[in-house]
Length: 152
Image 1 (cartoon, rainbow, N blue to C red):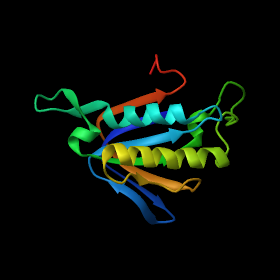
Image 2 (cartoon, rainbow, N blue to C red; image 1 turned 45 degrees about the horizontal axis):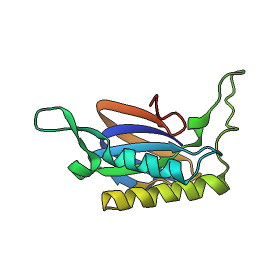
Image 3 (cartoon, rainbow, N blue to C red; image 1 turned 30 degrees about the vertical axis):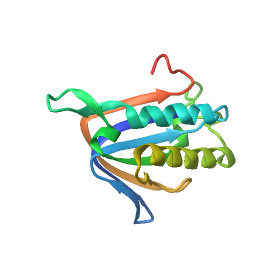
């Protein structure tokens, strides 16, 4: 799994002009699922997202997690995180999981994060043309890859 994690002051997702999810302070996470991903990837990534200390404490140091600040989580599925751009100018998405695998894994991540945070996770709609609005806070943007944990 790959994730782009952005600390935000607010974020919202709209599909066909209808808001499907919105948060105030918290994290906007763009999530890509690969064919090779399994439950262990979801367990590791959900724990990291919910406990990563990237919010400021009273001294202005990044010592507080999403759980600590009671922030929201907006989780958006994004297969394009698996774009391969080596050849030509048109990206290939061959490594991205097909919807029959990716959707249940995305839904599993929603459930895991909701349980860890003790609150509902806000979402987009899997496979939809989504419009995401956000205000980066910092900005703080972190990329994670469950197949390359040592470098992310």
